[in-house]
Image 1 (tube, chains in turn yellow, green):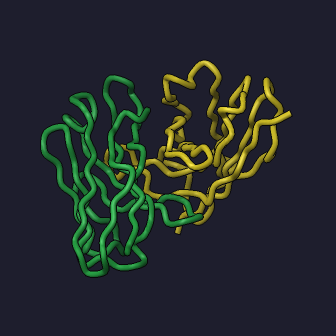
Image 2: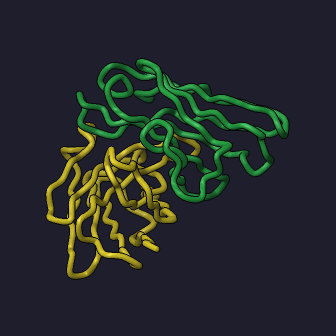
Length: 118
Length: 110
């Protein structure tokens, strides 16, 4: 059973870069898309973007200019970098396995809370 | 402002049937599949329905999905207290090249 564990700083200063890593266990990272979705406090879900195991990416247009998602198949992990953060980037960040329109987002990590504050 | 529109709340008593609507447009629901996610309090979302009406293994058949034009619905029959959760619809948007979500519907079991 595939499990995902996100890790990274829980507090980031305004203007800095938010960096998160997600480790995949219980299954191979190969042959799948892996993505990030976030949820601001008390609000709904926002798709951030995803990456294929081969490295090709698709990003939310509203975040694209600040966003980098990368993958390291040797470490069974993928990562998120979001630059120039503001308080609006405060959210629970979920890493997930994205089966695209075949089966949607079928595996979710527990989520990690990131607060943007000085 | 979410691309897909859901009612903010819904409610029902145990045993009842409730439906949650999701309205979109031609670039998303109108020509793509619809997915539903259930988020229990304090938990990560969980895939509930995929490709409009398909249920992943382990999801009870009390949950069903449908689509008509640019709208979709999630129906829950035989409502149970453990169904109290937030429900989100989602679809791929061809114009944005992105997954879009509804704002979520908080279901209360009275």
